Length: 496
Image (cartoon, rainbow, N blue to C red; front, top):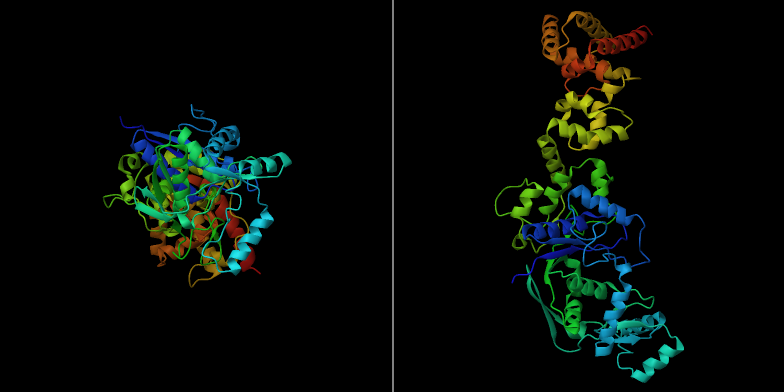
């Protein structure tokens, strides 16, 4: 009988949730859902020196933002827990004792200073092998016991085979061979009782029933160690899939873990939290992420998460590196913004307005949505487009009122004429536009030139949402008050 697919995403809480990790989580999630399996979240927190107290919050918030709900793990429970490695230390000690008893692992009493001296000597002698020299590998039981009784600190190392090759199949790369002569006897259990990644992940993957491991290709070099550990325990190794590395936009190096530099010197986002703060829709980020290293069978580019569950397959994952493209991601985001219903877009924009100090409601901004949805590529851009609806422009630079090839006095004349018309016109945007355009034709002035000072008086900017639709929303009283303030200010300047 075919096993139920069980995959895991097992990050270390040592920093912020990077988009590289997000893609790994996404591929695992999609594969599990496609196969009707389980998506497990495990926290590998055994690196206590690099542990970051906020990392778990960033991770969980990021996964939820992307819509990648896990079936088992922190906050969900499950039959294979605990799902945090620091809570599983007794399990690792028990299992590593099995390896000691079978002779496939051994205690190493070498000090860090000795290890440094050994490696330095190897480098001086141009040795083909750089690493631990297996000094303690063949100590007798009596020698080991004597050191233990003296309280000598020790680690537990794994006995890798010295001859032959270790061959491991990767589901998308085929068989990968490693010469055992070049492999080290890695540490499995550190002197503080915490396991290394190699030991903990093998034990956890087996005990949690993981059937497929999808992880970054930086772990390919660990394959022979893990394969030999599975053999030493007598366990079946899960199917392995190593995902292509994500390159930075230049294609000349890996995606940064701190932030990518834009051509203008600014730092671009690399963490899921940053993309959320900037106003990238989770639909857009998921859609873009899946295509960074995977390709559908058709030319279709836009996918919902539900569509991806039915479309995603391991066979379409690339083996070559994938290049990150910020411009394409922003294009995706703009398209997804346009796909949202006005009510939904208003709801999503609201937190960004609140962060900018604009107190409003989704219902109040709903009439404004159609004016900006084609103009924004990020939700965080909404406040700069909408702020004039909530606060009248102040301290507008004099030059801003002046039409192209015009003068400040001309701007005053246009506003005087417009102010008179606004008193009697029906405040409906089409009526406003038609009436003011007709007046511009009577004055033999280009409409854009005639409208220019009015736009600045109402919006405070030369580039703003459609003027007459904005005026209709603001209403006659508010628009006339803004024009009056502009005229008062311009008159004071033209009389200087």
